[in-house]
Image 1 (spheres, rainbow, N blue to C red):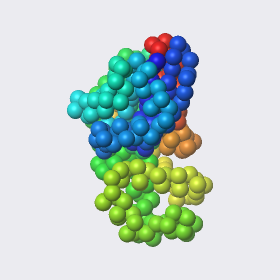
Image 2: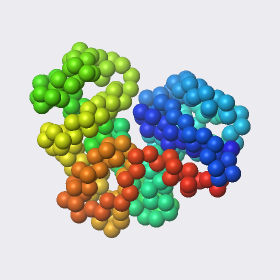
Image 3: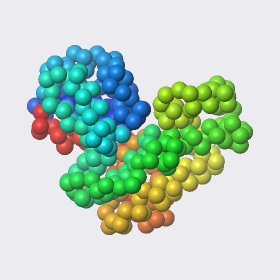
Image 4: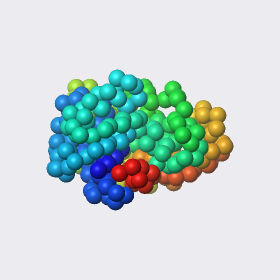
Length: 281
C-alpha cells in the first residue's frame, strides 16, 4: 500500500492506494514542522481512524508538506511518521514540489501556492529551483489566507471595515480586540487563526472593499513571488490552494496586468499527485 499526503498548515489531505486504485481518502489537521513537534504530529494522525486502521499495512509514504524546506524540519516529519507507520519507507518533500508535480507534471512551469500561506517556484520539469520566498505569515505570505486575515482583523479593530463586514465579524464570529490579540500573540497556530477569516472575504466577495483588498494582495504576490522569476513570461503559471481557487477571477485579472499566462488553478493537489504516483503502489 502507498500513502500520499499533501499538507498545508491548516489541513492535510491523504490518499491510500493499492495497485493503482484508491482505497481511501482522509483528512487530518495540517502538519507543519515550523509549528508542530513530534507529539503534535502523531496526535493529529491518531485522530484518523482510517490511518490507525491501515498503519501497519502501509509500505510506502510520499509526504509533501508546508515547512518541509530544511533537513532539520524534514527530519521532524519523517521521524514522526516513522514512529507511527513502522513498516513504511518514507519520503518527505516540500509542498512546493508537490504543487509543481500536481500542476506541471514533467513540464517546465511556475508553481504557486495561495492557501493559508503563499509561495512560488520555478520547476524545470524535474526539480524545483530554489528561491528566497516562503518568509512565513509575519514577514511574508502575501496574497495568502493569513495575509488577508491579518489585514481584515486589523481593520476590524480600527473600525475601518464596511458596516456589513464589521457587523458580521462582531455578531456572527463574536470577535473583539481582546480575543484577536489573544489568538494572535498568546495561542499557537496564529497563522491558521488568521487564515480562517478569509472565508469572510468570500462571503462578501461582491463588496468593493473586498475586491480591492484581494486584488492588492494578489498584486503584492505577483510583485514578490512571480515577476522576479526570469521565466515568468515564458512558461505557464499554475496555482494551488483555496485562495487561488475561490478568487480565481481576480487572480486572472491581476495576472493579465503583468502579462502572465495563468495555467491550472487547483484547490487541492492530492488527486493530481495520486495520478502521478499511482504506479508506485
